[in-house]
Every structure is written in structure tokens, then in C-alpha cells.
Amino acid sequence: MRILSGIQPSGALHIGNYFGALRQFIDLQRENDAYYFVADYHALTSVRDADQLRAYTFDVMVTMLSLGLDPDRATLFVQSDVPETTELAWLLTTVTPMGWLQKCVSYKDKVEQGLSAEHGLFAYPVLQAADILLYDADLVPVGQDQKQHLEITRDIAERFNQVFGGGKEVFRLPKPHILESVAVVPGLDGRKMSKSYGNTIEIFDEPAAIKKKVKRIVTDSTPVEAPKNPETDSLYHLFKLFAAPDELAEVERRYREGGIGYGEVKTRLADAMIARFAPARERRAEWLAHPGRVEEVRAAAAERARATARRVLDRARRACGVG
Ligand code: TYM
Image (cartoon, rainbow, N blue to C red; front, side, top):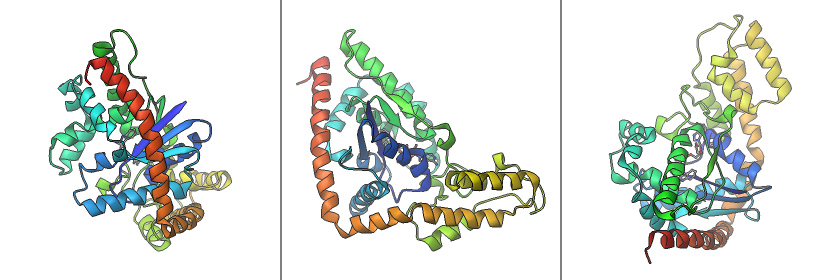
């Protein structure tokens, strides 16, 4: 199967990105033909400093490599190294009804948070559809917040096939791959962990920063002895992502029976987080010491990605009669 997904370089990646997306990227690279990319065209809708965008793009590449994405198995590229993406986005935009984009919650959400209502933000899902359709993707591993974008991608593909395909399939229809248990990783305040909410814990935060942030996770004021409901507690939700099964069973029992304090859970969570990412932290130091190697990975992947993209773009151009 062809797997494809992207991540925006709008800052350091956080544990929502890790559990919602990156971990699936790593699992799926083994048995499939995987394409993963750093979505720098998309990040332009929020990052407005060229040096910063370049630095974030590099940082996201390094983060992916450090966590175990293997450049010999997966094609790990940067979106803008394949300018064919923007041409396909234009072809797709000609068949995309305004109403579909007006319905998009992520656009409304971002404008509410203060991003200006620019056309790029509005047309963002069309560019995302181009990313996905350009590589004939079968499966797209993402978190829950991308579900609507995946639906629009399928709708656009179907419409293009109908309008220009004359009954033939120009684009393959992709499916989302969303794991229920990690679809929405909560942040420090219990809402979805997101850079724009300022409630994140970054994967490569220093151990002291992780400890400090974990202490800030919002809990209720149930006393230590009283029973607690693990299902409604975002601290427990986070703990569950990191704990070993026997440790989790013990903590769950003590939640239900009473006798565990949130302070204890926080200490254990911070320790587990630091331990989980320790090997990746070492690999990260290695990659950072050899930036030339990252550039080599990027250049080789761009070549592979572009060859695939070129074939699909030519198919789309032929179907609609340009060029
Ligand atoms: P982005 O960069 O916001 O997030 C990258 C991935 O991380 C997931 N994610 C989460 N999952 C669970 N819980 C959370 N709290 C959480 N926060 C983030 C996201 O769902 C996503 O899978 N538009 C995309 C980038 C993109 C893309 C694509 C994705 C551009 N083109 C093509 C797939 C295919 C985005 O902004 O993701």
C-alpha cells in the first residue's frame, strides 16, 4: 500500500503529533511504500519569517529521523521540494465548490484564534488534497483533527474524476487511518494538545521543562483518599500513553478505589516521558551534529517524490486538457 502523510513545520513537534501521527508513520513504514513530508507550503499560512521557517523545516526533519523514520524505507521529503504540488492544487481548485471550504472547522477555528482570513488559509484543504492525490496514496495516517480534510480530499478526487475523467479514475481515493485511542491527545488544559492553544509538551523538551509542564496539567480537586474516574481525567489519559500495562493496571485500580494523588501520577508520568524519548534524544544529537546528512536525506527523497508526482500530475494534466 502507498502510505502518505505530512506535518507542518510551525514549531517543535509535541506529543500529540507523536501519538496521533508519527508513531503510526513509523509502524507503517515497515511493510508499505511510505511517503512522509514536512508541509512547509502549509506552514506559510502561519509562519512569516523565512529563516524561522527554514529552521523549523530542518527541525521537523531531524525530529522525524530521530524518532525512527528510516530514510532507507520511507521517502522523507519537504513539500516545497516538489513544486508540482502547487500546480495540482490549481487544477483541483477549479472543481472545488466554495461551500465545501466554507464548512471547514479548522479554517473557522484558526480565524477565531486570530489568524487573518487569508485566501491561503481558506484554500488550505485544496493544497492538502493535492499533497495526497499527487502520490496515489491509499492510506493517510492522521489525528482526528484532519478527518474533515480527508473527507474533502476524497470529495475533490471524486469530482475531478467525474468532471474530467469521463468515467475513468484519474485519482485514487485515499482513506484516513485514525487510531481511536490516540485520535485526540489532550494538552495541559484538557483541550486537544495544540501549538495554537499553548498547551503542549514538546517531544524534545529538556527533562526539567517536561517536569515543570507536567505539574501544570489541570486536574480536579478530589482528595488523595477519594475514588476518581480515570475516564474523565486528562492526566490519566496522558499517563495511559506512556505507562507499561502492569503499571497502568495498578494506577487504574487505585484511581477507582481511591488512595492515589494526582501529584504521584504526575511524577510518574514525567519520568516515563523522559525515559521514552531518551534514546531518540541521543539520536537527535547525532543528526544535529551532522546536518549535511539531513540534507542528503532530503535531496534523495525529493528526487524520488518528484518522479512519482510528475507521473500523477501528467495524468491529471492530460485528463483536463492543459499542456
Ligand atoms: P499538523 O501539522 O497540525 O499535525 C501533524 C499530525 O499530528 C496530528 N495531531 C494530533 N493527533 C492527536 N492529538 C493531538 N493533540 C494532535 N495534534 C496534532 C494531526 O492530526 C496530524 O496528523 N494539515 C496537516 C498537515 C498536512 C497533511 C497533508 C496531513 C498537510 N498536508 C497531507 C496529511 C496529509 C496539519 O496541519 O497537521
